Each structure stands twice: as C-alpha cells, then as structure tokens.
Image (cartoon, rainbow, N blue to C red; front, side, top):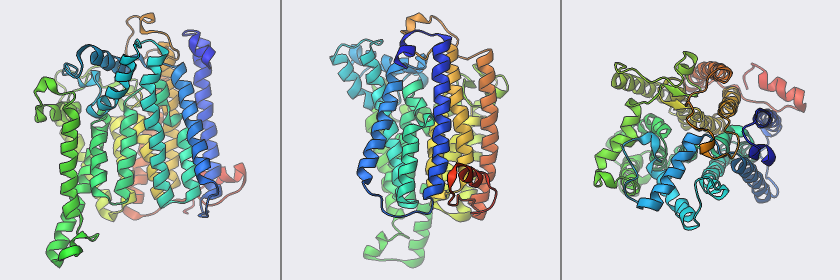
Length: 502
C-alpha cells in the first residue's frame, strides 16, 4: 500500500485501496457474526486475556498507522490541524480562534494538540513532512484505541468476557472505526471516544463522570453537541427522582449516599465540575474574548446548531439525496426555528422512550440514535461524521444485545466506508501528495462519485428508519431479538438473519 500511496493520485491506486477497505469491512463483519454466535452464551474465564488484548490493540495500532502514514486524507480537515500547529509556532496561545468554529480545533482537541503541535514545532517539521503527518494522526489513533477499550469495558461488565474481546477486536480491525482517524483525518474521533466513555459511566450510573465525559465530547467537535439532549435527560431525570425520593423518605446521614438519593448530590457536582473544566480548557483558545465565558459557550455549543455553511458536504445525509451536497442554506432559511424544533423533537423521543422503561441500556441506545438522527437530518453534516454514531451503536449493542442493532450498524457502516473511500478517490486524496498539487478544488464531489454518495445516503436513511422501529420496540416494549448459539458460517448467517425472538 505504501507504493500505491506514494505513486500519486492514480485511478488504479485509489481503486485498490478503496476495494481493500470494503473487503476488509465485509471480512470483519462476517468474522464478528461467527464469533458472536459462538460465544454469546459463554461466560467462562479467558486464558491469557491480557496477552490477547495486547495483541488485538497492537494489530489495531499497526493497521491504523499503516493507513495513516500512507494516506494524508481529506485535505480541508487535515489543514485544520496543521493551521493550529502553524499558529502555535507563530503566535503561541493567542490569536488562534477567528470566529469560524469550522476552521479551528475545538477546545479539548486544541488542548491535546498543544502537546503534539509543540513537539512538531520543536523538531522543525513542515506541514507536508511525513513526520508532521504522524504527529497529526497519532492522537487520533490513540483516541480510536481508547474508544475500543471503552467498548471492551462496557461489554466485559454487561455482556460476557469473550464477547468483550470480540467486540474490542472488531473495533480495532474494522475500517468502519478507523476511517475517520487514519484515512479521513477528523477530530470527530475524539467525540466518539469521549462519547463511549460517557456511555460507560452512564451505564454504571456514575453521574459525575458521565456528565464530565459528555461535556468533553461536546467540546471536541460540533458533533459532540448532539449528545446534549441525552446528557440533559439523564441528569434531569435522576436528579428530580432523587429529590422526590429524599422528600418522601427523609433519609438521614449515610443513607443520603445510597443509590436512590445520591443523584441529588452527584448531578449538581457533575454539572459544576463539567462547566468549570470546560471553561478552564477553553481559556487556552479564547484569549481574543478576554476570557468571556458566554462568548465561547455560544460559539462552540449554540452557534453550530443554527449557523451552517452547507446543508451537507459529502455526508450520509438526507440533503445529499435531494441534491443539496455542497449547497448553502438560503438567507431565508429559518435556522433558529429549525434548530429549536429539531432539538425539541430529539429530546421528546429520548424522554418518551427512556421514561417508559428507565433502563440505562436504553439510554445508551438513545445516545446512538440521537447521533445517527442528527447526521441524517440535521444540516451541517460531513463525510466523516457518522463514525461517532456507529461506535456508540456498537456500545449500545453490548448493553441491549438486540441483533437488529447489528443490522443497522453493518448497513450504515458499509455505506460509510464506501462513501469515505469514494469521496477521497474522487478528489485524488488517497495519497501523501502535498496540498499544492491539487489547486483550488470543489468541496463537494460530483458526477459518478456523487451518485455513490447518494446511494450510500439512501441506504443509511433506510437503516435509520429501521433503527427508529427497533428503538421504539426495544425501548417501550422490551422485546428483543438476540443472537442464539450457532455453528458454522452458514448456521451463523442463518441465525443472524432469522426473525425469531431470542
């Protein structure tokens, strides 16, 4: 692959890399189905677990580094990282943010790249050096691996030990989960990682850590903001219920720290800690505001809801289907009204489904559903945005165990991989060529590549409609269709596609 990546933007090399990622995705999916059917009811001890996990993560890291060093990725997103590092070299911590949240790293990711960018500047790397590419990609790869570890923690605690390793290996090996970091190069990878840990602590009812990680996810990329309805419902429900329980039972002393009452204390602490932490991290990049707290809160949390440059840019979005790829919203587009209505609808769905069962597994599924829905219907989505929704969907499967979630994951995931590969191929970006080799290129794919994007968007939309049915069915009735043990590839496929309830 090194040869193909360095040989220029040839059609042959682009096709080979694209086909390889698709075939690797299909292989990983098939292997996952077999392993799930084999170990779904096996809760025995795992010999040499640490060695197996180290091997899995080593292979995942090597695979990501291989792609990451051979493919610079989507040039506009890659340039966001290098511009930050160049600004750090020239101006230090001041003058970075210019009012355009799409052109800068969000506060948490900015904080991470202060370290890596500083190292790049000390070593004198230029924007086009392979060393700079390694510096940019390495934090993304680490975030990917940490997300895999979060999925492992969830599955190990709430599924079984062998399935935990299988799901962790799937995240490490499947292109669905490394296209954003190693191939495209997007800070959304950090949102996906922090979102996974937020869901892990949510499942454990650790209110402080869950709120902290939800907040950090929101300050990692604009997609992280889409988790706010879930975090808000989670915090408000448990706080109100705890207050009602305290008023009714009047507990004293240490009894206040028991499960039914503790949220009255931990939720406010989580809100205060999250807000204070976000503010302190943000101080590194909001110097032009003179440390104005409300100024940067608006720009990084509220403005992305109502200010969009494009309806979508090569994204798996309903706007791609209707010919709005690369199109800008008109001046008369009711952005505030649209934002308020859409937020209200998502919050209402989360409330209705979650309150009907009040199950932590259901809320993680709703987090994935919220992210998925926003990527499909909300203006502003990009080509790599779906990755955060897909890994949360896998985390939800580890908790809910309904195989229909895997149906959604595999269809949308394959569409995501094909769309990423075709978009980068259309621009000639599956290589290490410097930016000046491309000139002024359009931001939106056209022609045959756009047809592929539309087809992938249609498949993802159908997967979302199916996801909606599954979410309502599982969340409000508790009915599940779980995988049963099966032998052989044919038997596993038959079980995977069977319609009987598990």
